[in-house]
Image (cartoon, rainbow, N blue to C red):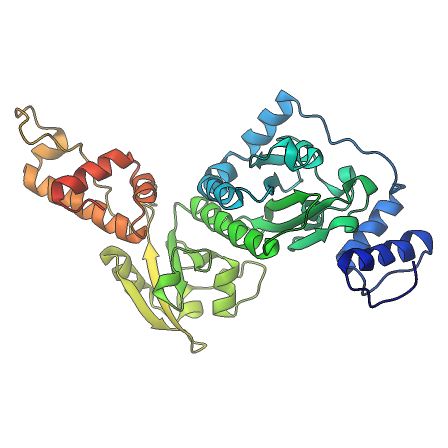
Length: 393
């Protein structure tokens, strides 16, 4: 191949990079990302050759059970978003793969063998997609660097993987440590959409849900420059303990607050937000949205939420959880009242239940499924209460 830097296509540019690196021993800076070059170098140093055959680690039942058990919280947190992602990818021939921090596949969306036999093999639960196992891939590079990346075609180290396209993004836990990697892959075709952006959005959504689930004993702060951005992957999130100190802030929140992008400095909420703790306490009790200007001048909408299922007993915002009773049929014959109802009349109990449902539903952006999970009840129970109140969505 002639040494022409101005090729019209990406495959030609990548082909020149491979020629210079593997045949001539020249670092192909500028032709492929530095992260790809570094991955190639690690593979060569491990005495791997591009032409060797590789086999994806066989899936065994014990491996599957072990991988799923270790990542149950992650899978539960990401369930809805992964289901939504499968709907989004329908008809594209792309597979969404979720791995743990060690690149072991713990979930993948459905694709047929017609979409690529290699991708079908790689997406099985329990398969090892680490760089040490299958060479240069987006999941392996994210696991090592902690940064999002995309690997196109022949940027993969092994020749057998050159037909793959993959984009991956990290998912972190409350300690800021890598918890998982979300990857979108397709075989023998190019992405027909912005795969890097889509991966980032869904990885952020899963990360936000994971952070929320890992912070049930604390108060959760949601904030953004516009109220319509709350409860979306673009919202800032932070958790504070009973003393008002920040336990963690997500990436969007750190950007809004202009805080360091890593580390846990345990600053007080008043220092970071300019909000006094009593004001946040009052807002959480009333379930109101605060409009507040940060010390850096940015105008934000802030929502403070306690967890309705596992509120910390020592936290001053915590309120006793109201028990949602199944609404009795209108014509039902009166029977013995439950203990909770005997302490108050039936009308007040219904009002308390409906108020709790309404405030929870509002906090969840009208999402009945999410509100039911927060309350620890079924969706049907929520719908029945709303129907009796004449406010069924």
